[in-house]
Image 1: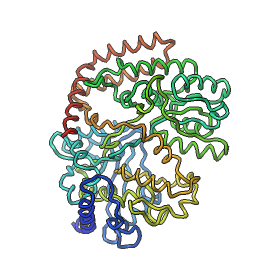
Image 2: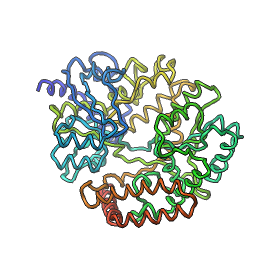
Image 3: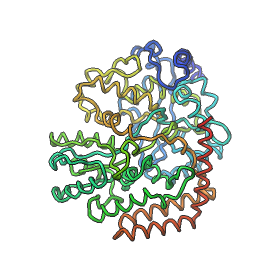
Image 4: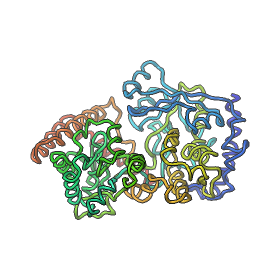
Length: 547
């Protein structure tokens, strides 16, 4: 109880500041512009250094992803600052590359961690139905950052069937965002005469030139899992982000339809198979590992790259290759599209106000309120400055009237490659996208041009502009053990198998034949019923949004 009383004392001040902010902003989700509404970032008595008033608290954390490895707590500047000043320590639990089986084991043995990062949907509802999750509603007014910055509409979309809120959103937003798109090798592009590279016809001609001129270079790199093919699909129709391929459905405007009968998907697979047959796409597209992709990028052996996280891969590759060859580098381009389509109606990625995934607190947590209070601090301006830009005193000492950190001399004089080693941003588990993106853009503009972050510039000028809001499609997946959930698993397996076969097909006729077979197998597995389930959920979401 002493922990709760002590931490509540801190948050009383936060409530007071929030009341002031709400009165000035008229209920907007955007950060307030008044410097007076935010405390000073330095000094032992500020909210960004409240450690003297808190007792230490430790909780366990698990990221429910095969690929996710949580860094050791306290080994980097950010988590060390949080440990010393917020008195929070995190004990990571790793998936070991088998997230699904790990989660099932923890559920069966009643050894769930205190906190989990997890995708919205089936697994969350399974945990909720099993009585394993803590409802967050009673904390929303006491700790006001989440409610202020996410807003009621977003929180209502996150509520479960019982009307309660169990999910703390991560990277929720009110504006376009994303890391997805296309980049090109600038050295190769210039050496080949900087040709027009706007349509798939342009791309095809360019890739053939690359193959002839640079036999050791991959003309078109698609990343792990051939993800670049999903990115490519967005260019075969207007308002058609790669989400449709990853979700295994498309829309005709009034209902959700089979991905196998989507014209854009059909054109995508025909083109991708053609590129693969002609060895214009990396030949181990579906089997290569992440480090293999990065090695090719970082040594300049990729001409064109499309990927879901191209913003971060591109920055690392640009910096690594420039360190080897000053004439090397990568830069983003506008998404490649089918001839005749409007370039301003091509959207590669999507975003929704709910963000990427969610944090849930399980009933194994000894003090869920203390955890929520920490997460609420983390998602507010102070927490976001620390988590995303690093602790005060490292690369910033003060912030401007909008809350954006002002880079100090260390920020200006430290190479980006060195900054990357410090894992800044790795523990931003409840990202406030609009605040971060606004602050990030302002932060970068205060740096000398040659010190600006490659990723931020690429996001601002390309990737955020080609991201389409699709909030209406969230929370439509069925529970895994329902008829629709079983059908979803079967359809996904059919898709994965068919995708690989189509990519390796010997000609266009085989691609189309495989697509027809996949459609029939999916229908036999319950695809029509699943699509109707999706459509009903989609329409229900639209009704909530339109209220």
